[in-house]
Amino acid sequence: MSLTDSDNLPAIPNLELPQSVFILQSENLSHLHEEAHKTLLAGIQNDEMAPFAATLPTSILPERDALVTQFSKANDAVLKEVEQSIAQATENEGESEISEGIRKRAMYYARIGDKSMSIDSITTAIEKTAGIGSKIDLTLTLIRLGMFFSDFNLVVQNIATAKTLVEQGGDWDRRNRLKVYIGLHAASIRDFKLASTQFLDTLSTFTSTELINYDQFVIYTVIVSVFALDRVDLKTKVINAPEVVALMHTKPLIRNFANSLYDCDYALLFKSLAEIEETYLKPSVYLHQHSRYYTREIRIRAYAQLLESYKSLNISSLAKAFGVSEEFIDKEFSKLIPAGRLHCVLDKVTNVVESNRPDSRNKQYQQVVQNGDVLLNSIQKLARVLN
Image 1 (cartoon, rainbow, N blue to C red):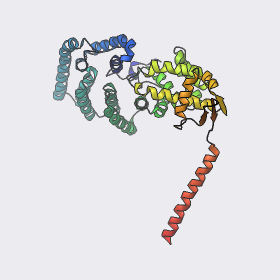
Image 2 (cartoon, one colour):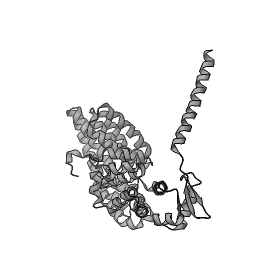
Image 3 (tube, rainbow, N blue to C red):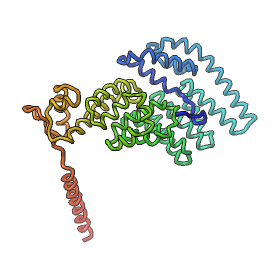
Image 4 (tube, rainbow, N blue to C red):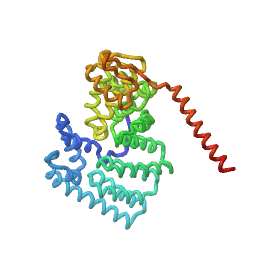
């Protein structure tokens, strides 16, 4: 997907860095530490991020003190120059030049990772900026800052602000970008249905490369949509989507994961799910805390999907279908059935699982009767009041 420079907001702050920090802080991701350290070091050096480097422990950034010393003077020099340009604009030029200088200062603080000064400067820039479009861009920067520093409140507050600004007059591009921000935040708080809706709305028009790269965006779209959509929508909206098809040529794991659930190839699904967890969930700063929940729910969905087609199945057939041991199936079903997550009965004597799916038509009838009783009671109470 090619984008012109005019389509892009600057990737400030660099959101690859908190991802690298997360990996370096995770002992179970030691196989990724070397690459993460390279990314972190290069990002700090490229943006001369003395304030951000100063917040990191030497256990994950041994070069911290040298980097802070090296870039602090450079930061001070740039900020001094920016302050002088703002002062000059205040004395000799108009409001637009002053506003431009204030925005430049705000973005520089964000670029070097100075959280408190970034927030204060961007807030001031928003107040001094007249155009709705520029206000939205600055508010999106505050959302990225919140994601950069894992500040949940900052993200939530500014998503709400951005929604209001977009409704007041945001153009199509900014409205589209905001959906990706909302979707990524939703994924990070386990609202996979909202994430899927927002991501799918922007799948063919994605431009938010300042937030997440395109391939990663498509991967996240598949992951949340496999969780959130039924089989029909999964096929039409995801598996057949040209953007997903293009990615599947280079990401066979994503292809196997999405297709195996739709094709009812449960052994491949379980194998792919384990790889998805290790490759995309556990190493993700946004999704790692949901990895166990996600994999469990996908397994439950697969069990339920298979049981829909049979009145009963023996344990050995289930184990073979899912490519796991009989002991694994027995342990899973022994927990899920009492919890009400699967509508079936496990007969330990015969080692047979018998489906007892609720009768949806009978359930609807009972609901109508119940609602009718409530309505009659309300009418009787009203009649007594009127009499």
